[in-house]
Image (cartoon, rainbow, N blue to C red; front, side, top):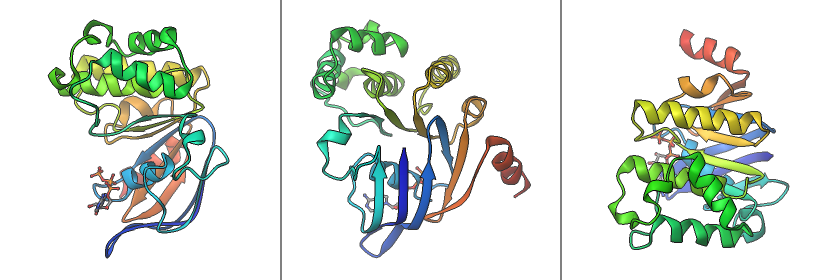
Length: 220
Ligand SMILES: Nc1ncnc2c1ncn2[C@@H]1O[C@H](COP(=O)(O)OP(=O)(O)OP(=O)(O)O)[C@@H](O)[C@H]1O
């Protein structure tokens, strides 16, 4: 799904990602690590939002930077979600669906999965942080993408929301959807993760099965 080779991203003098080489396969991959370690930078490079400073990244067999073709095959949910305040949720999801070649029934299916149907006709500027998160997740899964990239999918959700959204993501993973999620709230997701990658100080420091990685993290 994702191949990075000596991938680096610098912001001025700051090295956010430092010559990372990693392979991420099919299934559900959870990315963990300390604040400022480079996880979101890696996800943004995968989504084609950032251009690599050096090295190479391929997602679904293509370089994602400035590549609308591969972007239309991905589902993305960033954190914090950056969505147009003056549009309604429905207008926004319809817009994303058009970009992906999906239709109204795909929009409604995804909206229902993340329980956003009740506020789809309100302007996004009026949404609470939890509602925004749900809309951003619904956006990611419209038309069942080949790969969903999720940054903090459980952030800003209440207890019930964390349980519901985790279960939905687990169901989607069981159906065979490929998902890469960066999440500090990892316990509700670890049960259905196929692999865990730990990024710290701009490097991939651990990669393996959930059991292997969690045992090592807990020993640190
Ligand atoms: N657009 C940007 N401009 C400048 N510096 C940035 C930018 N994005 C990230 N950084 C810096 O790159 C480093 C890695 O940030 P990143 O957001 O990737 O970390 P993270 O692992 O996702 O952290 P967190 O767990 O806190 O979300 C940090 O030092 C951050 O300040």
